[in-house]
Image 1 (cartoon, one colour):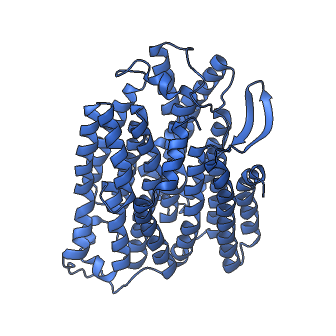
Image 2 (spheres, rainbow, N blue to C red; image 1 turned 90 degrees about the vertical axis):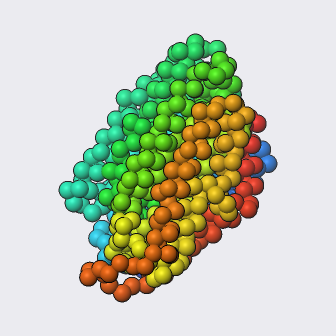
Length: 491
């Protein structure tokens, strides 16, 4: 398959899969087989592109032009290649996990669930391979719309309320902030193409550039930067596989991916850094640093496990934004690596949370005393995911945090250094006690407790695979590292 054909196939395969899932809806085994086959096929299409991109190729497909300089087009560059690899590989394990979860909890509307999941991956591939900001904006909006039924899956009043917050904040920020920013960028530069070095050099003064960056970044609400972060905890009413989609596979990753992409390919790193410390992106370092610390404090005080993980995600995403805004080569590499490290570590944590709910019907941290003795595979995987979030070896988060910290020190941005160090201690404060309780505290007598072991086998296999991948990325980070360096070198 030619690279250009693989680009189109990456969008077409999940769309075709969604149609086939709908046709197989009355036959659960066939429906779930189609889901897994579609996910594996998508990964195959994405992997077909990797050798060409690693060799310096940039496969591109122009679909059609609406106005001069405003076209719908696809182009595979290093950052998009990494995002597509993450999303397509995690869709396989998330599909496997979903089979065990949806059956184990006897969830309703399972066919709609799998259809919307496939459509979400199609939109994610569109975001990953967007050749310009206009195309990214369109697929970004599609992703919001097709994930809404997943957030409101249970159909309860709480689910509908969470869905309203989700839809309101994400559509609101993109239409009020991102769309005007896109139009202004097109007006200034005559294009919205993602271009190495950016398209805005010499077109705006310092203050105007900072204001346009603020409009763009806050328009990307999926990045969950405070104060536009509430949609993420609100969406935790969804089933755990949806939480995994939101936090690891697609939605929040689309947010931070888009922020890094506009910094590198629209605004330009050198252009933003021209004013030195206090440059056009320095306000973003401060806001992201505040988000890191504030979200960590909320997570520290949350007893509900999914709420704790949700605020952990808000904090971890802000690491990526802060590292990118530092504009130092090492911190930018760290930002890209952390997209991958967080994806595999956080999906492991959510898989563990869902397994605990399925097997033991427990949702609160205070209920987890001794659960590691009954669910050693689940809590062992949780421990690995926790190490990655904290930034400790042998987990992938150590590598990304090392680069981010090195970049902050190289930039002599000591406030950022203090934020990374301080938040690491906070991360340890809200993750390590969970692991300690699970393995080293005797279970309390609970009249409502019931004998249980591990969750269904597909769920255990999925969380074991993602935990192993988290460790593997610590020892073998070469592919994401090479792609990050290509991006910096003008990819």
